Image (tube, rainbow, N blue to C red; front, top):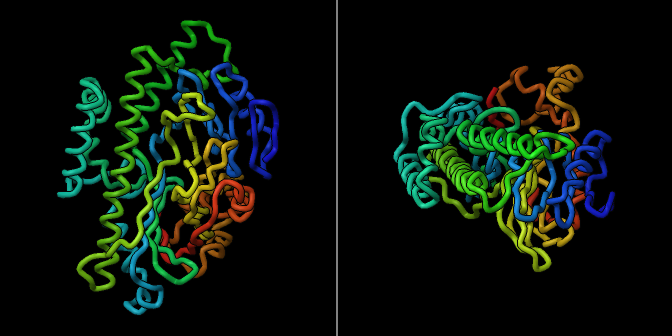
Length: 395
């Protein structure tokens, strides 16, 4: 860990100057206490750095939670080995089944609700009623088809994978969040915070660092909708995992896929926490909570390792750890820098949909995940290292 200032601690051995300046701007805000913690995967983000932990007093910065509220990971350990899965035949049909079972890419949703999605939608309606009369009308008004988004992946760095650990045990692993409905909630409240800052003539280093103050109606509405979106993201991952597990069961000619171990965790979220006896709002934007012994998931980029971890409860990091490899190249830079041939080489031995669409997701566009994990050795311990067998992504 490197102390960049009294209010900025850094765990990233790879940190460019632009990202550092952004983090310094965030750390300079009066509401930050005790300090911003930069994770090993830190890189430039909207307003606040991706891969940062921002504790705030009586306020929350909506852009510091991120626009994909509740984005995170779910992993399931199955009872089967790589040998058993491969013995059932080519993995290409399994990939195809997954791609048909889960809507992929931005703007692609379900045409109808499965029975399990209906139950999850009902759970979300009940939660909305508990959180406040305004929540469901706000959600439905902005996103009338939110129920159909349950069980959809999205695009970018979201993925579904069939993987294997160091003992050749097969795991199912996926990454997604609150989809379009969460994005609209986030963008609306980022705009409300900006208008408040303009109205009160706050001098901010970046207008996306505007915050909402506890005790105001705007804050209360944001917290209610945020909690709803975080739960939507959790259930969205569960719904997709049900379908992926069903696809693997078909491949294995089994009635179902037994789940021997399950972890489902956010890495774009905020919650109330107490640190050193002080009540704070802790926003993790591209970071997971890592209390002592707490299970967590840290994916690498496509074609590299991912990790099942347990937190070490490092108090200086506010019990946090990285959420992935972290981008080293922007999407446009990656497309200009790397070739399809390089992508093909990096994906050798993995069943995937061969396409130029994934060039900006090439592993070389990210920080080396082994470096990130070395930087994180005082934040988490590795329980399992996963390698990819099947990779599914949206365009």
